[in-house]
Amino acid sequence: MDGIRHYRMFAAYNRWANGRLYDAAELLSDEEWERDVRAFFGSMCGTLNHILVADRIWMNRFTGTGETHKVLSDLPHPHFGDLRRERGAMDDRIADWVDTLDEETLEGLFSYVPVTNPKEVTQPLAPALAHFFNHQTHHRGHAHMILSVLGHEPPSLDLIYFLRSDEGKEFA
Image (cartoon, rainbow, N blue to C red; front, side, top):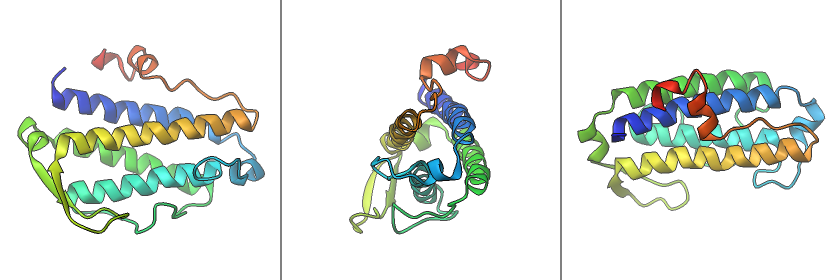
């Protein structure tokens, strides 16, 4: 699989996995949504907001446009419905942007200023994009664990299941 197809697969997988995760999180009570279960960002609310915040930061770095944040623990959408709408819009934005990439751009350099250490960094785009998708998967794993701790059945989020789904068959 070439580089562009690989990243398009991850953009589609990201949308699919987030849809499944948000379908499961929608079943949480308000108390469960906000309950601190000692995950890295505390609650399901904190965890899913963190993923959106980080995605906004990275998409602003990649494209030079869109909202960004100065703190990784920002909570821009404490209410589930608002967060779900923003998540869907972000997943569309990610997929649309990845569709604009070509191999030359993917192999090129880009510069940005990290939130945690404000000194400009220049690096190849492809590894940063790999980190971007890996970061989402990492924290979806936290959200998966939160569902389990709260006594809810977490959905399967495995990439291999995505590839077997209608949404993923074109990448299999």
